[in-house]
Image (cartoon, rainbow, N blue to C red; front, side, top):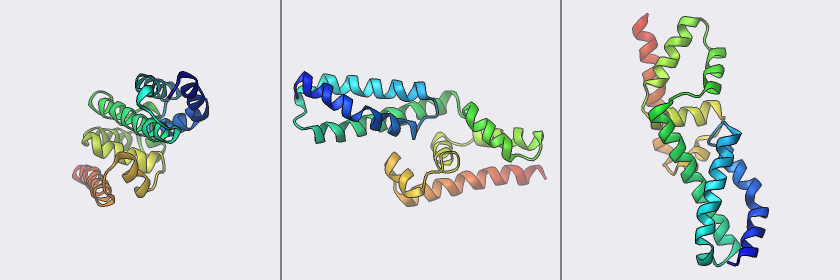
Length: 159
């Protein structure tokens, strides 16, 4: 792929890649950073890319991987985003319930937190989550069930 072809590719696909990154991360700035990093990786590989279709497929994979890497690292350092806390706060009936719910969610493994976020906060369907994070539907259902059960057990234990 020539430099000019790569420029055309970027112009044609940048919005699609931003939309894809926004499915994973809440922040517009983070989505921009992910797409920028993906395009830099593709730029270094442009001589090996034969077709626009191949570049489009590879760019999708790179954006997904970078997004998931960011979510995983956030899971180790910052488990629940500010936006997530606001949505959860609206659902909680009292301040005490809200604090306990946040604590329960933060105590979940990062994979379960990510799946809960994609399902309940982003509104994604299980099939979409499975293809997005490359897990089977059954594994998604199992992780959702475990996460919900852990949160429920924490609330039942206090009563």
